[in-house]
Structure formats: C-alpha cells, structure tokens
Length: 103
Image (cartoon, rainbow, N blue to C red):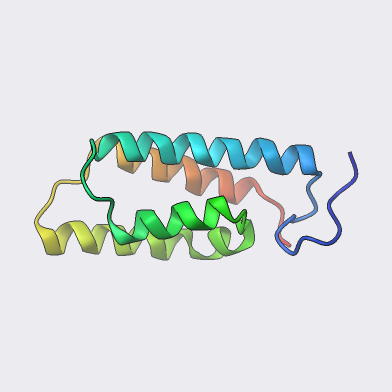
C-alpha cells in the first residue's frame, strides 16, 4: 500500500501501517485506562487519547515526553501513586514513537 499523501501525520507510512500503529497505541491506552480502574482519567491521559483518536502521530511524537511529565506532575500534585502498568504502557508508547520515521 502506498503512503498516504494528504495526511500530515502519515509520516510516510501506508494506510495499513498507520492503522496497525494506531491499534498498538490504542491497546496501550486501553491498558492505561484499565489501570485507573474506572477512576477519572488524568488530563494528560485524556489529551493523549484524543491525539490517538485523531491519529495525530507527529504531535504525539513531539509531545509524548511532555505528556508523560505532565502526568507525573498530576500524580505528585494529587498525592497519587502511578501504577507500574501506566508507567510500562507509557514506555511502550515512547518506544513506538521513536521507531516512527520523522515527518
């Protein structure tokens, strides 16, 4: 499948590759969601979920570290423990973003 030409966040990937990548990110987000066990999601997680839903991969790639930092600050401010599952899934997302070609 040829790369998607008109999508600024296609990052040179085919539509099939983009769909697979979006599925990987969504799986990680689902696991993060589960880790909060029905509690209200922190704003940085809600923001990341919206970026994934909109397939704004270049934005995710450039902002994932600040989203993570904002999540840590949120937990510190609220005095909440950040679960290992959330930490692990964010690491998975960060590694996936590093594997993406630059736009």
